[in-house]
Amino acid sequence: MAQEIPPGEHDHGPRGDPWNAFGYLVSGVLLYGLAGWLLDRWLGTTFLVAIGILSGAALGTYQTWARFRIPDSSATTAQKKQQ
Image (tube, rainbow, N blue to C red; front, top):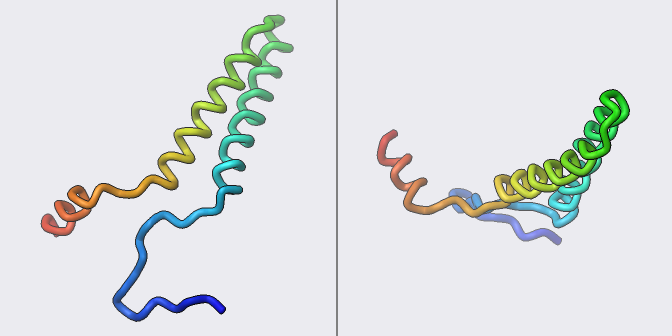
């Protein structure tokens, strides 16, 4: 059975499945790799697929970091004080 969180006590930390992170990385590589391949075919070049794959990996890594990072407690405290 799942544990219930008492009212007023919320866990605001990032929740995620490692498969989500894997999905971000793989989808970034596939999407931008495909775009690079299509541009290679259209323009008659051979290097855009590599640039697309590397860009997709970098953007997938950034998306994973942005989604699963733990917020800085001092930044959230400052935001609460402003409200």
